[in-house]
Amino acid sequence: MTTPDTDATVPDAAAATPPQVRRMIVLMLANLALSALLAALMLVFQEHLLDYQLAHLDLPAGTDLVTAREELRSSVWSRVLPVALVAFAYLVVMGGLWLGRRKAYRQVIFISMIVLLGTGLTLFQPFPWWVRAVNVAKALVVAALLFLASRPEVRSWFRRDQPSRVG
Image (cartoon, rainbow, N blue to C red; front, top):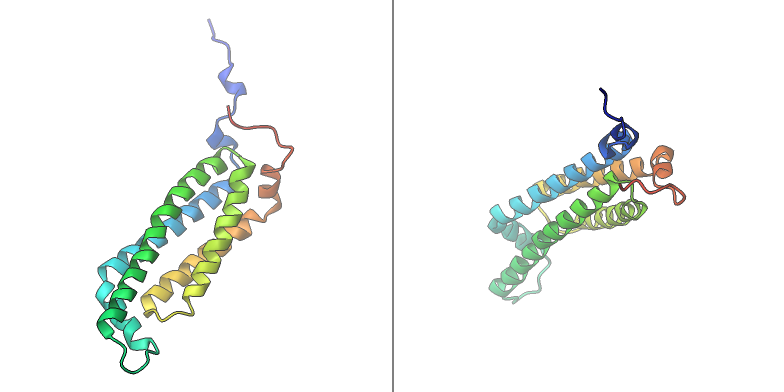
């Protein structure tokens, strides 16, 4: 006796998700890993980073270096904290992408543009070579993510008139 084949008519989300969308998720994970790496490096090499920034800042004569160093120290933390926020946002958006939600697709575009802009702006600030290298790698990953998101196959997957894929 055979059982009805009802499960075969409901496609699995992983099998139904186009490969380009899965690649987008992989690129998001790569960007997240690079961001975590950068945050960890900034914390581990915090003193080196502060020394580098102090040496390359155009400070007026008589500036209190201890105060300037403490202000720079707080700016290091302000760069590390957003990694946690972006990580949380990325996890939520990746789930939406996997399920084919149009809102998640729009969020990827928005977040990627902000990450690309923010990463690009850091290239004009006094940072050591290793910060610049990770930021260039992040910019390349996000540019690839935006390229994939612009592909017709991906855009059609997230069309407005597309039926809901959420079971």
